[in-house]
Length: 78
Image (cartoon, rainbow, N blue to C red; front, side, top):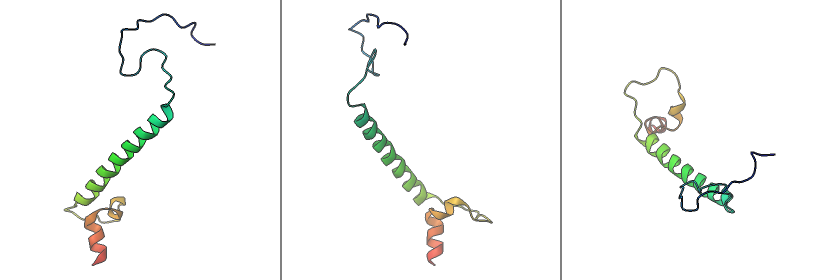
């Protein structure tokens, strides 16, 4: 199976992806660390967006962003 034998490749070529036939031993931890970083950034962006969201024309029916937008959370408390 496969595409044939591994052929010789130049050793002096650098690649940000790791080069030819890479199988890093710590791929799982690298993936977990990267996903944690992505989720942390997404949560930060989500939080800032929810705090700054305002609607000048109020919707005539409930919309999903009313659950987390600061403008509507404050109206519910009053």
